Amino acid sequence: MQKHYTGLIERYRDRLPVSKATRIISLCEGNTPLIQLQNIPRMIGKDVEIYVKFEGLNPTGSFKDRGMTMAVTKAVESGSQAIICASTGNTSASAAAYAARAGIKAFVLIPEGKIALGKLAQTLMYNATIIQINGNFDQGMELVKEVANHAPVSIVNSINPFRLEGQKTAAFEIVDELGFAPDYHCLPVGNAGNISAYWKGYKEYATDRVCGNRPVMCGYQAAGAAPFVAGHKIDYPETVATAIRIGNPQSWDLAIEAQQESGGWFDKFADQQILAAQKMLSQFEGIFCEPASATSLAGALNDIGTGKIPEGSKIVCTLTGNGIKDPEIAMQQCAEAKPVTIEADLDAVKRAILDCL
Ligand code: F0G
Image (cartoon, rainbow, N blue to C red; front, side):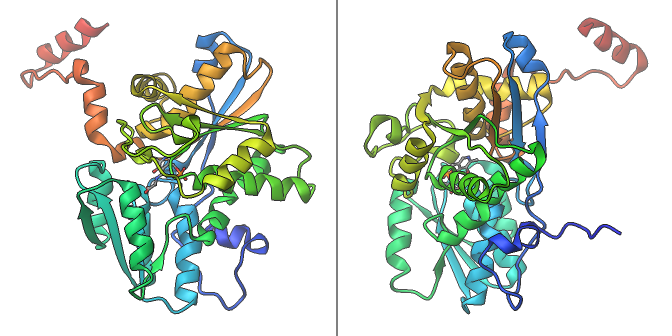
């Protein structure tokens, strides 16, 4: 009989820093679907295979759960009673959930007014202590690093190396499923932990000869928050994709390494392009991701269009978070498509249907 899935640490135990005695803090994260796009490639008239790794189907709705299961497992193993992070919303939701699971305390610093509603609601429900700051993520990050020197709390941002260990398993899953690494891997870049973790995962699998190839890594940012494209940090990052509203990425060197070693590149896209990709994915493929996540597809479509990513390529785009997390943007995206209200009778319903056909 097949053993039921118990999370990514159990699945990739031999490649992760745990021992037999370690108490694993898990919510059965990972094992997310790799969905091949069917309609969009046809619509753009290009011979490419595009797969999306839908990380929005993790337990708290984002890829952060991969890193958090590892980080909280190790925090608990070292005797920590409390964890802390700065966040644009997803890390805080994930940290709060895993802390609840472990029975420890979570403190989260978030930029006031710049967190998607679903993320705030989750974090409250998981019972974390939320500290809102009159400042942005980058300022929150600096404060968290300082306060951890003075208070008995473990940082669970991606500067915690265990986060990247957990997150690298997404690359393992892709290779396990396809049987090879894709030619191109596209993903949104904010604090730059994820691109670094994927590259680590692909390299570990390639050198172990699980597969013979590695992808070119394409890191995409929002135009108003694109330090990697500018080549320096940005003091006042701004974008509708609040998850990646970051100007001073903590994993700068690792991300540059991923780009250079893989022969990849960074690029930036306007908020309108990001939102258009989000809507396209929902409308034509039935996949609803949050705005920041759609940056990966916006970038891939742009680079396929210009030929930078050639025909015949196999491409994976990571969709980092679930669209349900940001209902406000979704409603704005569909402002023209307001639901009609009618009388509750058969004729009225028939008329409403016939009007739309
Ligand atoms: N996509 C989403 C949905 C995110 O929440 C984040 C980061 C990223 C992409 C970028 O990933 O930072 O590894 O480059 N969110 C962090 C947070 C910063 O606090 O939730 P990265």
